[in-house]
Length: 149
Image 1: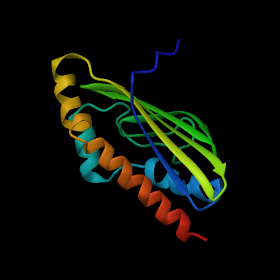
Image 2: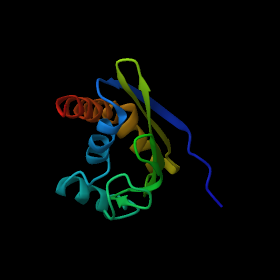
Image 3: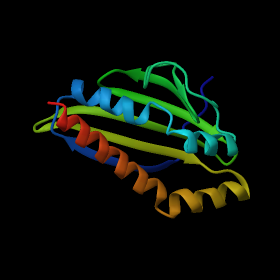
C-alpha cells in the first residue's frame, strides 16, 4: 500500500524556450543524478534513503541519494520520493507544451516529524535555502535547454 503524500511545501514554475523533448534530458541530467561528493557525504550524514545512485537519470526505478524515481513518463512527468532522519518528502516534475516553449513545474511535499524535524525544516525550508536551490537549478535547466538548439 502506498503511503500518503506529505504536506505541500512549494511550487516553482519556469517557461523554457524549447520543446519538451529537448527539456527532458536536461532536467534528467540536472535532477536525476547525484549532486557530487559533498552532497553524497551530506546524504550519508543525514541517513538519506535510498543511499546511492542507480539506473538512468529520472527513469522509473532509478535512485539517487535520498530519492527513488517511483513514476516517470519521459518528456512529461516524474515523481521522486525519499526520506532521511529528519524528513519524508516527494518532488514532482510536470512538463507541458505552451506557446513559447515548455512549462516546467516542480512541486515539493515534505513532512518533518519530531523536534529535530522541526529544526531541519527551519534550516532548509524556512531559511529559504530550498527555494534558492530550486530556482538556481531550474534556471540552469532553462539555460542549458535553450542553448541546445
